[in-house]
Length: 145
Ligand code: DQA
Image 1 (cartoon, rainbow, N blue to C red):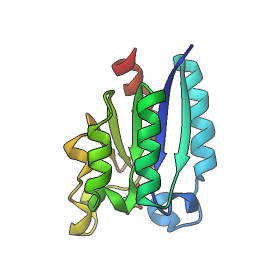
Image 2 (cartoon, rainbow, N blue to C red):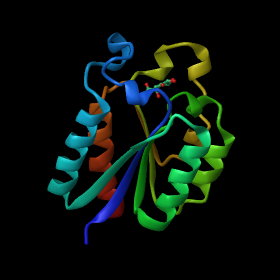
Image 3 (cartoon, rainbow, N blue to C red):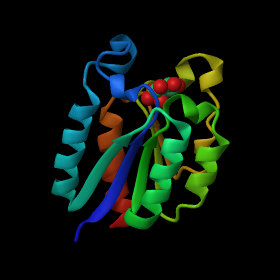
Image 4 (spheres, rainbow, N blue to C red):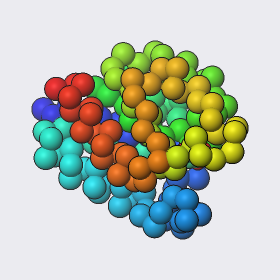
């Protein structure tokens, strides 16, 4: 059975492709899901993508991943910069965690420069567009085997 990687996405990422395309690009979350599923199967992994607009929803997705997944790739979106609850949930997850941001958060407003999730993440990708998810998946293969 291929190892499962959970790809979790936070608020407003359901609007990917329509929301500020000059910052986040024109690909939709469904496009990202398809590309990740294809690459995962090439790598001998299985990828499942989820999105929630709610902090508690993301906490519950992380709890589910504790039972099901070898690794987590997470774009917590705005909760990156505010959520101790998501950090705590990730601290209760035993496998590798990779944080992804589509935009280069360090080039943007200063409130986006802090990430609670980075205190837990094994690696961080920012500013590489939606390709960041695929690069994270390749790294995951190295980490989970
Ligand atoms: C984001 C960056 C966050 O600052 C922002 O709130 C998002 C998306 C990104 O992928 O670039 O919603 O995580």
